Image (cartoon, rainbow, N blue to C red; front, side, top):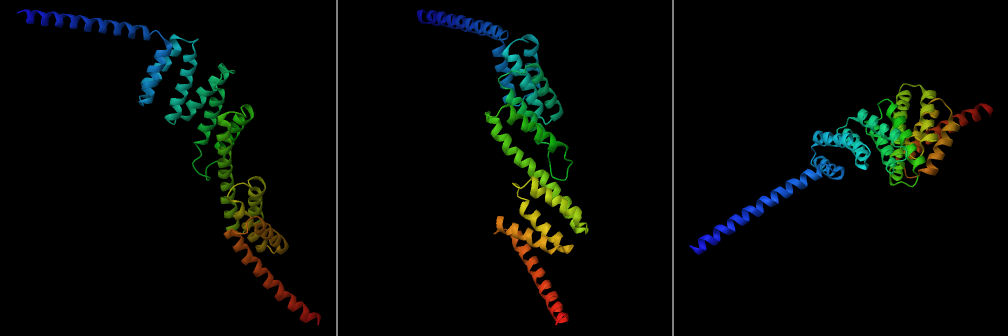
Length: 268
């Protein structure tokens, strides 16, 4: 009987302790709901679990309840970022721009500018598209570099600019090839010259030079064809495009040798 009585007492004590813990935890939860930092952590957990719509609502609630807190500003950034993750680029850019206007001195402003650039950059699907997003992306990445030259985002912005320029160069190459194939040699030359003069660091430069050799050859401008082939050979001696240009220049040599023989015959 004594053992049974002791067991009953222990059970009552355990239940009492358990109830106390539940009440305490419940009270702690009530306190945390009035704390923007803890609310932000909760919203971030939902974001990390890809519960984006719930996270968006929770971030919006933080903005509403604690508009002057640091968490409110960070919540605005996260709301914009959720739009970016969902590829709703227009809303993402709109929200990021609102943050720039509202908090022009915020410590993470370099990130906000970078995200605007990234939204435009990710809408570049191929070189055949309109150059609208090319220009927007370049302008936005330039903003990051010029405003925040020492930012960790500046380095990636420089890399992205190279890729955007490659996209632009590819578009000029496509148009230039079209003109060349349709015997519009001057128009083709203009496009290839743009690639050589303005986008020389891209992978398209050797081909652009070779296409210029072809265009000059087609309209009988042999000296220009020679000079361009020489330039190609000097800068890209191992390129397949130089080998093609060299073969074309050899044909020019053969023609000129033949013409020279004819002239010598009549002169003699």
